Image 1 (cartoon, one colour):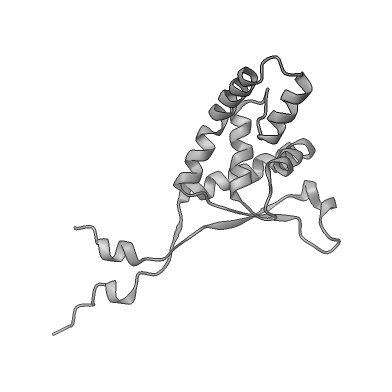
Image 2: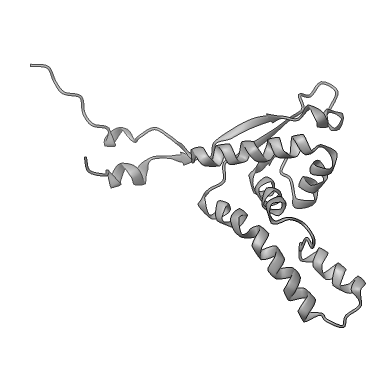
Length: 157
C-alpha cells in the first residue's frame, strides 16, 4: 500500500488536550469552580526542547560562572535568575518544569509558577507532567481526511 502524500498534506492536525484534576490546589480556584488544569500534547520541537533543557541548564551554569568569574556572588546569582538558569536542580526536574511550561494551556504556567506548584503539591506537579507526557506520546489529533481524498466505495453490480 502506497503512502498517500496528498491526503497526508491536507489532513487537519490539532493538539490533543485533557483536563487534569488538581484537588490539592482547590484553595486557589473560585468557590464553585472545579480544580482542573487543561494541558496539551507537545510537538516534536517542544519535546526536543524538553529533552535538552536539563543538559543546557548545566552548561549555562558553567558558562555564566566562567564569564563572570571575579564578579560579586550576588550579581552572578541575579544574572543566573534573569537568564532562567537553575543551579543545583536535577536535570529531570528541569525537564518537568519545561514540559509543564510548554504543555499547560489553562492556566498557562510559566517556569516560576510550575516550580511553585511543585513546592505546594508534588503529587499535582507530577500528575500534570505525566498527563502532558501521555498526550505527547499519543501524538497530535488528526482531523477528518478531506472528502476529495477518500477512497470511493465500490459499486455493486
